[in-house]
Image (tube, rainbow, N blue to C red; front, top):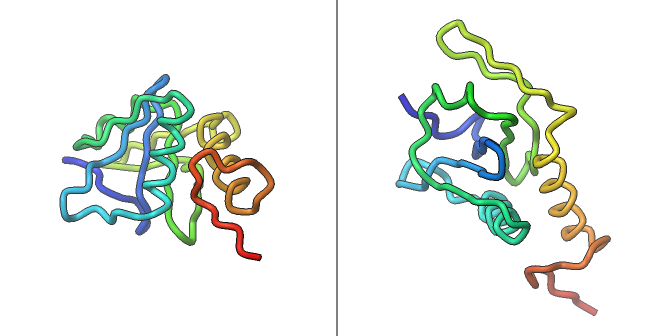
Length: 122
């Protein structure tokens, strides 16, 4: 069994310097926040894998986060599957915090936009 999304949001797993997210194969929403986070992660030097993600792989992740227009970038505290609960150290979600901080900074104009996404209108 594979995981595709969580609570109508895109899901990401952090495993070392690699960020894994389900590939968009027709059932996964190709969200703008998802796309932005992938581009930022690559820009920051992370390896990003877009592929099928077995549910069992959730146990191997150091942190898990989800993205969406309303959600932004949000840490996942735990996931329960088949009566087995996997908890993540939300406060230690350094990759999640880094990506959230940069994305919000770009959106609010408080940091330089490294991807030229923002258009200043006078």
